[in-house]
Image (cartoon, rainbow, N blue to C red; front, side):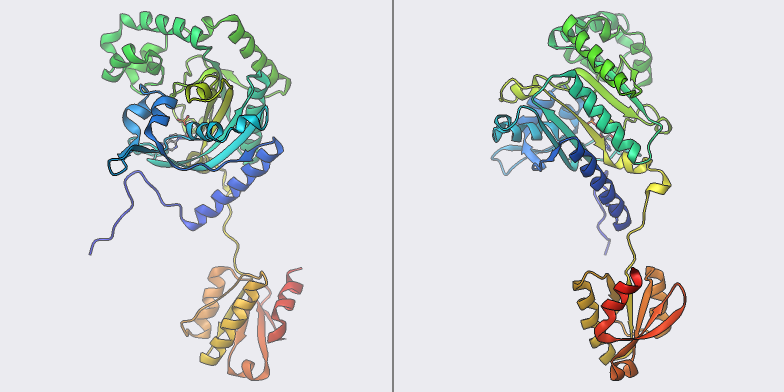
Length: 419
Ligand code: AMP
């Protein structure tokens, strides 16, 4: 019979990889806690309307990438393509805005987009998502970027580019939108089919188009930074001076408009030179109208999302570790010894000493081989004679020395030796 394989664009995270994911997650939790963030866990399934309203129904994600289905004819549900809309839904639904003027939240988990699978692009991928709600202070924007760079540097990613831009407020955007339409008018026949359509629905999307001709055309487009209002300009200047006061290097990229509709003012991305400029590892920005658009009060917010798979692919080799080996392997010979070993093995585990054995009745030689393969530092050899005397032979695999140890004191010996 044919074996069933994983769904296209989906990926298993195998044990060694998962071990490293856990370490990175743990590191994120530690750094985020230093900056006052708390974890929130939200469902992966939401009402479709949350995303059409939240992300914008003329974005690529909503137009063609969502996993949407009818829940047995009752309502339309969608596997979340990003986390911000869900976090904000929970924020509004549970009145979290009444708790604290500024609330810092993070969540880690899978997202789903039906994109064309390729290297670094999956249909189920994972994000570390961070949101700050309740303030439009530009120092909050800088603070987020300081935390992000601290996190990435701590993982050994020193050579990174932080690109920032301002998309202004909705008033600046509509002026800019007209300028972009006017700019693209003469060249519209050369644009790809998607961009020709976007010109009427969402012209700023042309900036994100991966098509080479569109990329060439948009290169000479006007800069949004020439059209933002005084308030937005002051906000952007303050973000910049706050980054500079912290000596955080950044580049201004006025063509970075980001793929989601809700962004206002500051947007930012982190790229790593060896990845190629198309592939940001982190994307984020401010979304001052989104809480209101989702039915909540008029509260500002800003956030970013780190792509977990891309982050893991970039980690330098010294940052990858192998899961710890068992401290002890019990090599038991004969049925009676295996019974004693079974009890001993689980007794040690209950005391917090990682211990392994096997139940297959293999020869001593092959059990020693297995212990070696597992990387176990100690092996306890148990045969009929050892059961009779109540003492096992404890072998240190590193020094190849051996000593007799009473079976009721194995844990004390291991603890002593490990000190
Ligand atoms: P976005 O939510 O589109 O701003 O993406 C934020 C980050 O998530 C990106 O910078 C990527 O690192 C990651 N990401 C987005 N889409 C995918 C995907 N299809 N596969 C893997 N990672 C992704």
